[in-house]
Amino acid sequence: MNSALLIKIVWAPALVLILHVIATVTGFYEALWWMDIPAHFLGGCAIVISTSYVLDYFHGKGQFSVNWIPLNILILLAFAGMAAAAWEVLEFGLDRYLGTSTQVSLLDTIKDLCMGISGGGLTAIILIIKKQLK
Image (cartoon, rainbow, N blue to C red):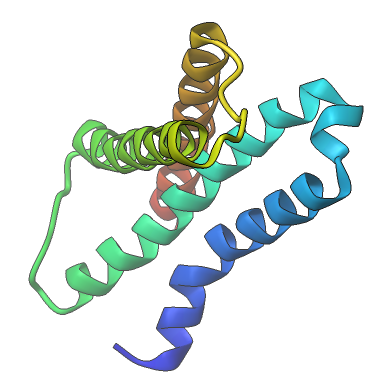
């Protein structure tokens, strides 16, 4: 795996993480309560973009190949869901052990999970359609 590929894999999640840190430090999330919604949506998009590059890499090496479109979407959605769940577990741990308040309610946590999966799903569909048109 070369450095150009690593940059392709990392850029989208890194950008979302940088935006999240800036929004947290500047109090943007408190000023605009709804900003958390697109942040989780973009997180799901970023994870699917990265996963797509990883899967394409292994496909190119002949180590992974799925030709059925619904299964491709499901795999990408699974990665978005796992990333969203891992993020919420991280937030739970921060709240529990560092005294932060990132998870204001169960409803908020479920909304965050749904937004991450929705962003990932939309991105998966767009990327797969784009590949089919090539």
